[in-house]
Image (cartoon, rainbow, N blue to C red; front, side, top):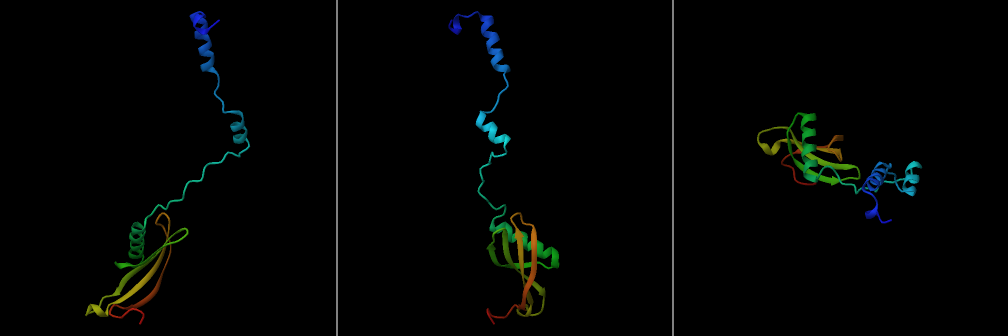
Length: 132
C-alpha cells in the first residue's frame, strides 16, 4: 500500500522509528576511523608573522635585552622555521653623531615572533663607509 494511503498513525510511527535510529558513519569510513587510518588534509603552512611584524618583534626583543633603542633594520630573511633579522643599535652616543658607536645584532625568531636567539655580530663607528 502506498505511504499516502496508510493510516496516519502508522505513518507517524514509521517516521519516529527512522528518527530514533542511531546515525552511523558509512561502514568503510567507520572502519578507517576505528583503525586510526583517517587522515586530515594537510593545511598549507602559513607563517603567523609577516616581514614587517617580524622586524618589529625583533627590534622589541633587542631593546628589551640591551636596554638600547633600535636604530633600524639592516637585514631580513625568511628561514625555514622563522625569521633572521639584523637590527642596528646605537651603543655609545658621541659628539659629533658621526662618531657614535653602533652595533648590529642578528636575531632569530620563530613563526610566532618568539625569540630563538640573538647575538651581536659587529660594532663600528657611524661615520665609517660600507665594507671598510
